[in-house]
Image (cartoon, rainbow, N blue to C red; front, side):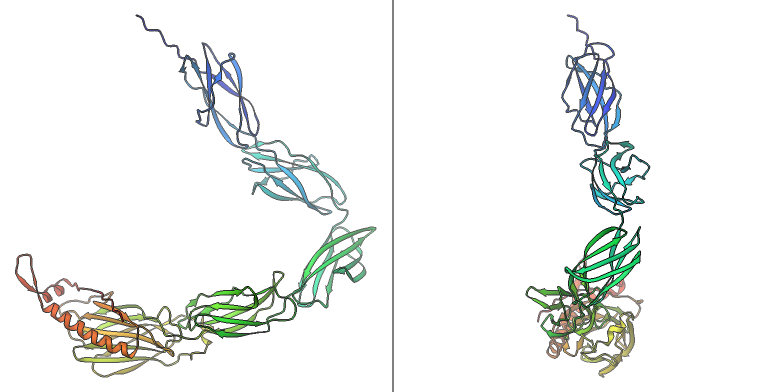
Length: 568
């Protein structure tokens, strides 16, 4: 039996006949041979239905497209279920949609319109005025935007339309709107306000003003016969923080022009404040000024500063039924420079500048603690607590080894008192570093430091090589002492070069004061004995031989660092 020959349909040819904002019409031609159907492919989408063959040249419209969009189109012929080769691809942009326009406002020399794009992509708009297409293209900004047409003639007639442009293709023009410009234009604006007066400027752009009348809340305020193009008028005897309805009737030549608008006076400055301190807040009661006030707030120029010269965040709460009260939340011990204003009709008053000091509390733990350990000394680094909660006036460092102990007290010699906010004026001053040293002995000592010194580098000399030491460190304000920081370390052997430790062998924190110190010292003695037993104990090598622990660490310049949590 002979196999039948398979006839592959010929490759069709296509071309664009027309296109709109939502459709493209193509022509499909079959060069030769039998064809049953065509399939059109749009942007690689082959889901369009088959097109029955009608004639060697036929047309097909592709619908439901997006305005101002890009499409690539090809076609393939089908005969007896066999597809031929696809045609060459053609590329086309749909026409952008027709915009909608309407009049927003007009003066004697300008018209403002609103342009809306119903759907699809738009690059520019072109506005046509009295068939003049020479106005510049308007870049597309949003689906609804405004455009002002200027340099028009007073009292003149204009017809306006708009067309959208996308990918260099113009769409259909919008419906035409018709408008007359005003015979003359008047602008009335507020140029100055106080708590009891408002000054307005009356200005004519194209004619001289012959006379004008000013009505305030429907009452005649002033009737003026005056020839000029610009005139200022001050409306007196008003109430602070109050909104007024104003109408100005201007006469130029034989025509009148009414301008209606609102004016508002400046609200009065808050008279004073009183403060009630809470556990974690300050309640501020405001003595209201004369006139109307909508609410009170602090200007963004307000700030709070902690005694360590760091900015402290704050939060302001309001009360639903207490307009004259605010609640300030911030850290203990901070000072705040508050610029309080009254607000009425979205206008702020002159600020009332006040200083507020939050009550102090016990400080937090010292910050950034680490050590630099040598054979006969240790250098201890620390900083003022991140939350000093007041003026830090002292640090207490207790240092011991075996039966030898010394307490070093660091005392501030120029710190402000607990109610002093003078440091607010030092907002731009940088903090300084305290550097000093002492020799370890059984004698307690006192060392002065200055308020601006918030970072400390303190060296203790005359230590024994390869010996265990411990210390506690705490800070204090007038309200008491903060948590203890405890650390324990071991000096290096003589033949080892400098080594730097970024942490202590044993470290922790205890909240307390005198009793806490006694407990931590007893705990330190226990830790010391435990540690001595450990380093004197034998360890076992992989070959089964015993070895003293102290022979391991110094040779490798490695120390064992462990952390113990101390619960009190």
